[in-house]
Image 1 (cartoon, helix red, strand yellow):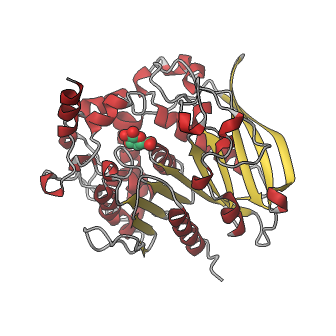
Image 2: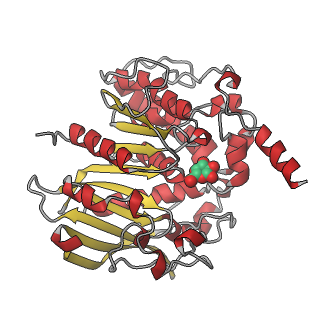
Image 3: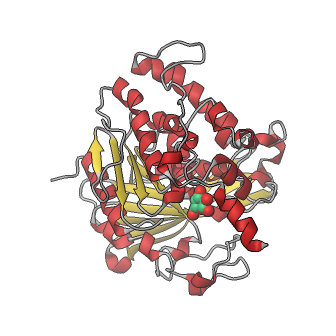
Length: 416
Ligand code: GTR
């Protein structure tokens, strides 16, 4: 019986390129009134706000933050972290509504020597707690709910000493510092625990009053992205950090979050999506790998309620994910896929970039010319777009990081 139901479930998922249905994407440059956008200023004043609203209304929702006050408290500074390579800071971000408070720790490493002035910095969320990204014993362990992972010594939904550094392969902190970049992270569970709790915990606990006007707008992805923007607010106050060179990045579900944060908040200078898949960089209408229905059923809290209306009805979406990339234009954007990560639909991830081209071209930028995937392990850069499909699995590896560092060097003119 178990075998039977698993078979049924997977038989609904398509991994065959020949079975991708024909689809017509909504016109990225055609306004809701049928006006064709011809200039970058028309894009910025008319179409971009329209598309942003559509994503808020139908996909990612929004955080109603009228009742929230934010306070930053630097709880730790070490000028000799990582054997003197880096300055480590821990900034507690307090989200306050009256007597209710939520605190998330923003962990920051900045190169000790940054001769070109304040350091550019990568910002991304992590899955299992800040202390899992590095063995540095000074990183505080979060009290927030953590998904169990026996392989990482995480039981009873609690972060542990034994899980220190378990995710270091995805966070080559020393290498990033050596390349002249800072790196900062927030544990996403500090903001909203990643399970369907009816938004009773995490950030939404503090927004209950405000959100009661529009409760269906709540989503975990918008809460996580909101926190990345608050980290950006902090960077604007820190003279060690170059606030005009913040790169927001994320892997998988946190890649969806990075894209949404980068779409909403124009202060992010570069946006990087690593294997973000459905609801991230991948086009929904291709229905290849994970589908809208599948993701909404597995993770009902990630997206706003209205996204469920499109389960098995991708063709009636007034948008598709190429328009999410369009919201990032003209800023540099890099999308990466992995060959074995069919679930995330590598080709759909590439095509979102390809079909966002008309927006980048309004700004006089060059865009990808071919609608077929580039070769494996051959990064492609044109204008402000970057893409690669790496061999291997759903992961963020040294190969990915080296490409992101090169891409950032290129855009920040750091190539000497
Ligand atoms: C999967 C989900 C993907 C991706 C991934 C992850 O289970 O279906 O969309 O987000 O989780 O975040 O690791």
